[in-house]
Amino acid sequence: MSTPSMTYRRLGRSGLRVSTLSLGSWITYHNQVDVKSAAEMMAAAFDAGINFFDNAEVYAAGRSEEVMGAAIQQLGWPRLNYVVSTKFFWGLAGKAEGINRKNTLNRKYLMQAIDGSLQRMGLDFIDLIYCHRPDPHTPIEETVRAMSDIISSGKAQYWGTSEWSASDIHAAWHLADRHGWHKPVMEQPEYNLFHRTRVEKEYQRLYEDIGLGLTTWSPLASGLLTGKYRSGVPEGSRGAMETMAFLREGLLDAKKNNAVTQLAPIAEELGCSLAQLALAWVAKNPRVSTVITGASKLSQLQQNLGALAVIDQLTPELMGRIEAITQPLAD
Image 1: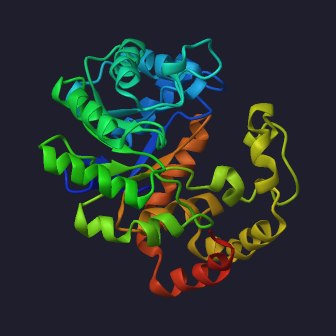
Image 2: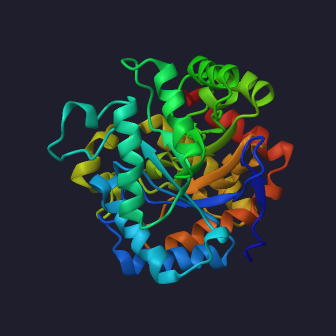
């Protein structure tokens, strides 16, 4: 199957355009991917039209940012040609820290966290910054003002949230609107065939009311939708990693793996893999600005890019068949 040209979508109501498929670094960078491999994959992604690369402070305790930053320096791309992100909340997990450096969105933490990420990535500014989780212990007004001030300082261009409730996003947006601060532009939620309610129902009003954009993660449900876990946990897979042991029960869910088996004939009809079908299904949702994909090797990245050819083939009839198989198991 030939790979069509990359398409681009606006990030919510902002003027920023991001590639329909993007590349993230969670789990892989530093743990499985060194600077040389990261540069190779990012170059291939860039050549295929991917312009958005996702990261977070907590990934590999900051080393994921270091790997991505070093790869970017090697590649020497013009700064206007790519978009990078990072996320704040967890701190540098696993390292000895003070009480105000983890599991928080207070002003002190945020104003220093951005400087740490800039240093690790070797950049003058980061395009997208996220509050990685909500913080019930910090007044939302404090968080919104701090994120806005980071934008005003020129250290980042846009800010948003990740895994926030619709009510908290709505409150943050209206606080910013009332005070003339920079408003949140995007949310980064989990979204796949088995995890759908938040994107499809809870956030529904936000798309029209505030123009919320989505940079979705886990489109393959941590690999479940590739079909590789139908016969157990394969050696070398994400589920086999001790650091990912918390995922195993979900990856071995018998009902969901049976549903994946039922999806296989649809993938065969389309001439694509199960992973490409799952990625294309997420991208089919017009509310999704970009689908963050992951890869630990170049061949996986190339396979993921094949999903671009599937998106337009997902007719209403096929979407209905997919819905009948997966929707009863979705949360």
